[in-house]
Image (cartoon, rainbow, N blue to C red; front, side, top):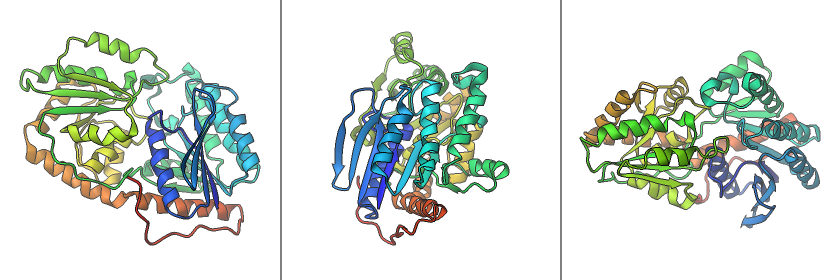
Length: 398
């Protein structure tokens, strides 16, 4: 069976892109597909990268380009795969609302061509704090978000990373086939040894709503108590906020012990977590389930997060433990960090709990859930083809 995947993809590291990268490799390892083709976005010229004998990555569409939907559709019509999986968020096709609209429209056109379609929708704009997120479109942002959700819901199967989203759809579109698939572990979980230096980690895209100013202020207040404290800030600049990172680095250039790494290659993510004692999610607003929560649990790292309703929902649904602080409150964040830095037992208890919880969402569990969702899409299109759900998986990629 042939599978096509439309997703952001490395070398650009985003939460949704990382998800697509790791899950596509696990799907390839499942042995259920003769061919997997990833249609990824690139701001440079089109290129083709062979990942394995059964999987290749083609950088077919350009972010922010109004021809993004046509590029996706023309390739898929030519290839005519048995299944098409769209791995999507509201801004995966770039900064431009129009480019994202045309990208989402391609899903509808692909389905109209008769191809079984599955979409993973990582965020519901209707439930987000659009003002804090500084969503493009002004007063039309909510309308635009609803339109994108409506287009995504035309897929044969909609996969959602939060059960809250499934419940939301069930009251509005009860006939829609929705599947709850948590983000889970990207790789086989590994309980890393506790880092000896006091090091904090922020790992996300750089945007004003990520709460970096709150974290930097809390870090400053902790330096007198922990003179050896370090803060690592990693992640690419968000395409909607060019220059934001450079402004922050300039404003906080005199603060000691801060490392600004920028975009981190995929093979450097594990060492990034290995150096950290505590991972911080100081977000002012959220666009959905956070992959950093699951990566921290996967590597056995203690977590501090702002008490956003979305984050609390993901934590509760996944059975994780997090040290919460009051959103936007510098002293509350400093206190939450201090409680973990001061107690190795506290850090260990939290990280061990989360490491055990993430065992229920190992990569093969997520892969099986997708294979079942793919079969639902094939069934919806009355296809005679079906995927086998393997009881045992071969060695998964590291």
